[in-house]
Image (cartoon, rainbow over all chains, first blue to last red; front, side, top):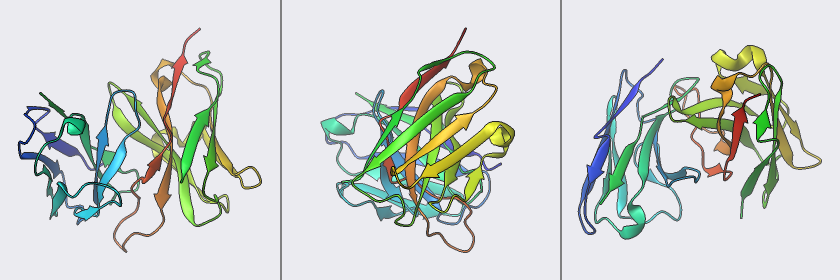
Length: 106
Length: 125
């Protein structure tokens, strides 16, 4: 199975900060990576697919990059609504796997 | 607007069958997407369970394959999950999902563009 390792696990930030979350795959997944935002007791929300494609309706302050084994999600200027947990997902493998999550808090 | 809504018992006894249904509104289930199930636990995180196409073709995660059934009812625009012989390890927040079917020649799964709000299922006597 492909493992997806996110860092950091927790990130303390302030409104207006530039935030970067990293996801490393245990083997190459090409650009088959998605990023999600999840708030407590809510469903994950798709932000980015195919490593860098912005889902419709998602603010452009969110961006994704990377290929192969290293990927990043960047929030250019953190807004109050962005405090949440973020997950990466690889969908190259049949069973698909998620990272363990990065909690962004104040 | 695409909406998914899970329903079903939230308490299931060990060794019994967990059955959930996902009602889809705002979009026809026959319009060329995959419909599936995910679950989330504090210990294992987000876990893909399986998916179904409107034709009835299914794909399941290997670890649950022997206990799992996912079916689709196009007349009701909904799909369902059955997981037999449940244990406490099957207690989780269950989500139904939609996935686009297109992917490249070297990818074997899909991302999830719509999710239901989730239903918490506890396995306990």
